[in-house]
Length: 252
Image (tube, rainbow, N blue to C red; front, side, top):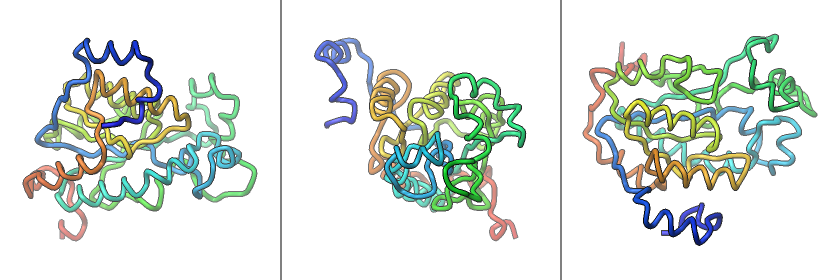
């Protein structure tokens, strides 16, 4: 099967992967949670447009690649809600004065624009607001974070423990940044990890491809969404009935 990273590998790389043992299929867990990492307006922009246009307004935007991933995310979220599999979103949070942006400002000279959402045209959008197309339902979980990993300084691990999860399905953005950081932390905590290849996106095509390759080699199974959807569909009904949050309708 052709992979998105194939064109970036040298002949030496291919031989190393073939002989080193890396990239074995780790397999799914039995009690997964879907992680939707940072799919907000700051990383997607407010409309599908080329990235070089989108970053004029939103300097962190991934442009049209974000909008290519949205239908995949919609399918995954719907499948998980149907099965009662927990859906957990992450997004950023920052003080109005931007003081707690901290180290994010050291490597990007447009950080002040990221905090204020002040681009080339007026907007009422909060950059950290999750995209309307995949808005959280009342029973979903939203984790606010300030660093790349969804685990760093957040209650994510305690939520997964409360739910009784043994694995995560990782999606979102950026592949090379917050997705990778979250995947490595999940792997380090001995969760089985699957990364949905077409459910992730990045502002850099090369970074997207090579980080998927590297995660697949060492930390996660990188799989196309049809494989992940088939896995979700085959999970037992009511798997999380005793541990997952309830929607207001179900709770009433």
